[in-house]
Image (cartoon, rainbow, N blue to C red; front, side, top):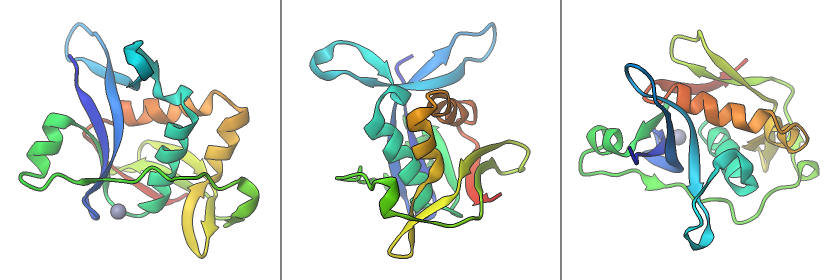
Length: 168
Ligand SMILES: [Zn+2]
């Protein structure tokens, strides 16, 4: 299966392309475990969590749409959910804010499933000109290489399920 995924904000009708869905073959229904992106020159695929620009864009997308209804979907689900109105692709930031350029709010935030039973900690909101533009979890994963695979895995695990960034 060569399905591709997007993280969509339903409120803003905007999406971030997540890349090729990595399916884990199972005895029954296939499960997604992560996302892959193409390498330059057609040299195959890499895990998205290995790409810093993609990690930055993912955390920035979650920051921009805090409190909004979001969902990670396959391309098929995307066209079903938004017939005739494909969500615009969210801009990947041209440049990354250094951690020191942002002011930190102390309230922790989490990415949670609609029932609230499953959550991924995003750390603290980081603001620029009073807008939340990033989460401290992005900067934490620069040193801790275990965090970024887990956020992509969380999105894969909850593919097709409504998600929201909320105060922890
Ligand atoms: Zn939004």
